[in-house]
Amino acid sequence: MAVPLRGGGGGRSAFGGSGGLRSFFSYRIFISAVFFLLFLATLSALFTSHHDSVLPSSGNTYVHHTYMALNSDPLKTRLDLIYKQANDHITLINAYAAYARKLKLDISRQLKQFDDLAKNFSDLSTKPNYRASLFETQGAVDEDVLRQFEKEVKDRVKIVRLMISESKENYDNQLKIQKLKDTIFAVNDLRVKAKKNGAFASAIAARSTPKSLHCLTMRLVGERIANPEKYKDEEPDPEFEDPTLYHYAIASDNVIAVSVVVNSVIKNAEEPWKHVFHIVTDRMNVAAMKVWFKMRPVQGGARVEIKVIEDFPFLNASYVPVLRQLEFAKFRTLKIGGENSSSASMNSKNSNNLSMLDHLQFYLPEMYPKLHKILYLEDDVVVQKDLTGLWNIDMNGKVNGAVETCFGPFHRYAQYLNFSHPLIKEKFNPKACAWAYGMNIFDLDTWRRDKCTEEYHYWQNLNEDWTLWSSGTLPPGLMTFYSTTKSLDKSWHVLGLGYNPGISMDEINNAAVIHYNGNMKPWLDIALNQYKSLWTKYVDNDMEFVQMCNFGL
Image (cartoon, rainbow, N blue to C red; front, side, top):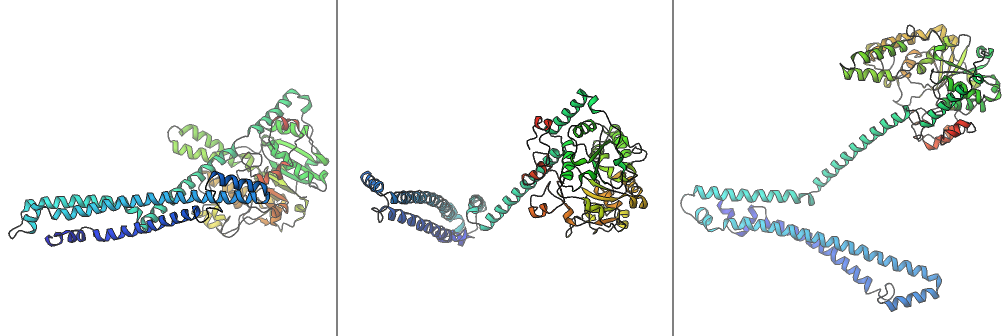
């Protein structure tokens, strides 16, 4: 240890290589100086070699140029542009020069600090007491002096490591890359979090009742209360049970949405007088729905039947699994909500996804026993073409005519059902293609023959503990009509207008039915603007309550 520390050169070599550091930093200073000289050379060229032709050097010269420009209008603009361009580049040069000076100053400061540290190491071995007791002695080394020397060396090593760690970022490219990666990951985490928050906010907006829709419902109910004689229920038309006509089923609590569906069907129908609409709603909205269609009768001779769920006596908790599960969920929430908040929360979440209006399509044969076929439409669709061709499709003994939605590995049964459950794994193919609700032609006679409602009850009863599927009506539909679905041409039903901004307008214009499935419903402020006009053109803007409630369409 004594030999390397002897002399200035040996000390630098042993404790960090001051010569190497000096050479490294001298090279960086040289590069910075070259850039700085280039900036100064460019600046000098702009002010000297082009002194007469670009930049005026005095006020008189500038006045002269201005006078010449005024006398030669075509060149005035060119002169102003050249002058502005030169000034912009001067500003740019000054900015780079300032950065170069700062860089040079920082590097010079660091170089001085490292030189001082190297010198401290070299001076340590030249201290008289250390030189005499450790390096020039012929006898035994003094242990106390050695311990003091070791302490001072370690203190200097600690300072060196601290300074190197602070300045390492400026020279270590790997460290810069790692820092950039960390920043990218952090930004990506923020993006994912923002996306989740956006989806949550969108879901809240989709499930909320807009102020304008609430206003419309209240206005219609107020009209019913103010004029009870005007809105008395009439005897049902015999056409409601005529199987030779075209029948539609719509289940909804949204007045404006239902009116758009009906209007779009009628305006595109070749024989509107042959169309019959069966609308089912809840008790809260039935009055508003009846007043709307009384104030704004359907054109073309079409007929509308409006009923409430309670008008079908067989739809009760003893027969319908969903109603029974809803009652049980409410009872369980009240009973154990205070004891087991997590269980109650999960139970409430699943029960919120249950709605009898959403499950009515499983009871169409019993609701309309005299009909042979019926077209089920959801309230977030718009019809763009005559749909009577659906009644002429050969169903080949199938019950449900629907458009398939699978492509590649997406929208397969595995995405909707729990294939870890042995019963699901045994009965269904995880790669089977899923189809869509929204526009479905049902052969009610075949449905009755195949007892599809009983099949639906079987699966719905098994899913009381939510182990077969989590929520929604599509999974039980996929199970009920697993082998009884007829695939329709995709032009009958185009989906995604409630979440996908990338659907081509050619595909939309060729579609018979467009479907705003997703959270961005066309009656909400969060709707996709490029598709909204396809829905709003069927809104009855002449209706006085629509105007009063400021739908902003």
